[in-house]
Amino acid sequence: MQCPKCHAAMHTYNRNGVQIEQCSGCRGIFLDYGELESLTRLESQWTQQAPPPPAAPQAYPPAPAPAWGAPQHGHHGGHQGGHHGGHRQKGFGRMLFSS
Amino acid sequence: MTVSVAQALSAVAHAAAPHAAAPPSAPAPTPPPAPPCACPRPDVLADRPDGTVVRHGAVVAKSHAPGTDAAALTARIATAAHPLLAGILLPPLPVPPAPRSAARATGPQGFTAELHGRPVSLWPYGTPVDPDDPDAAPWEEAATLLARLHATAPGALQLPAPLPPMRGPAKAARAVARMRASGPHTAGAATAVLRAWAGLPAWARDEAPPPPARTALCHGDLHLGQLVRAPSGAPREDRWLLIDVDDLGAGDPAWDLARPAAWYAAGLLAPDVWNRFLGAYRAAGGTAVPSGGDPWPQLDVPARALTVQTAALALAKSAVGERPLDEVEELVVDACARIASLPPELECEAPS
Picture 1 (cartoon, rainbow over the protein chains, first blue to last red):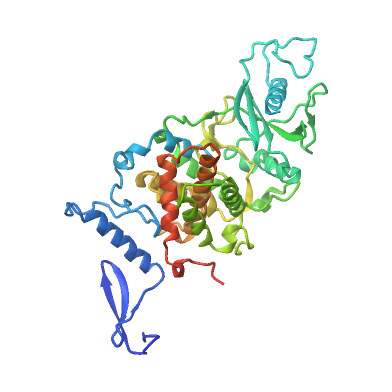
Picture 2 (picture 1 turned 180 degrees about the vertical axis):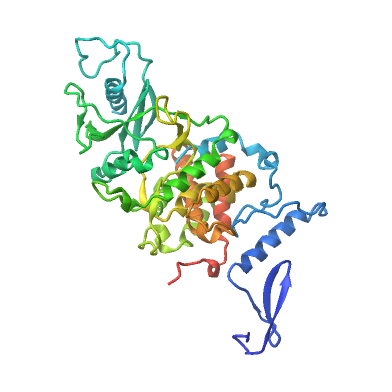
């Protein structure tokens, strides 16, 4: 594919599972639909993981979530007890039952 | 005024409830202040400006919102009574032709009456989900019921009046208007909500017609309070059914998944609960999202709208009640802030 700006050839790279195209001329980057969200998600996961060094690899792939999803997605998968434990009582119950 | 509505509703429910030893003579004057029978005391299940619900033994009487569109309500209740929706929606009870009742049957099939200028309907009482134990909630059953509801073509019902369009965008717009009218709000919170709202496509804000899509039968107001166990004596006693047809409509079924999706995206609903819900919906052939892969291309816009709606209502209520947001409401406002910070070029308008 050709760069829409300088018309040089674009090369495909894989960064953390996200395909990006970079122009060999102007170094501009082209992202397909959804790729920026994927990068944003990876970034937020990275900042989540940063303070403690990453431990065991994820046993399960994280469930798909929107770009604006709460950053803890994919880190407590299958472990409900750790999911906003402090919030899960009154207010949570009330919200689940109201219009 | 609502007290008298509740009392009158109680009388209607009482008149419709089966009585083991009803007095053979002397029908009670309306409304009876204390019904002379072995009924349990009437129980006001809900009393809000948009509806009052009173239980009397096995019967629940619901007074619908003032200004309810009578033709739309008739279509919605006829849908609940339709054989195609048996086992999905709780069917209504016919309003008894009781000349002494304060209510007068008005619906063509006798499922609605008018009381104090508001439409009234009658329903069998079903046991709701335990609000103190949301973890035990029937998520899979709710998803399966939705999938079956969405598989029903509105046109196949041949209703007395057409079912109105699904009003997800209209309800979100109403919540935002209510928030705007209720100020002043915590600095920043309302701004985040309004910015998240402004980033939605015009149709999702009810400012343009929705993009052409498959129209399915939609519940329109799914939450855990909308499930009850089928009453005793029902064909399949004890299975879960959907209740509350006031928002039933035809439209994009993804809006019915949007509230749980919004809870998940806000970090309120644990990923495994969300996966159970979504998995059950897909396993039951639900059509709102593809059967595999990422469901968010379909869910993103409705879930953003429901996040805004939930946050806007929370802010409106906190302003009126002069109380701070609770932690759960804060998380939904936080989700609005994340939506508001999305770069504008990522907003996916409906393909033209």
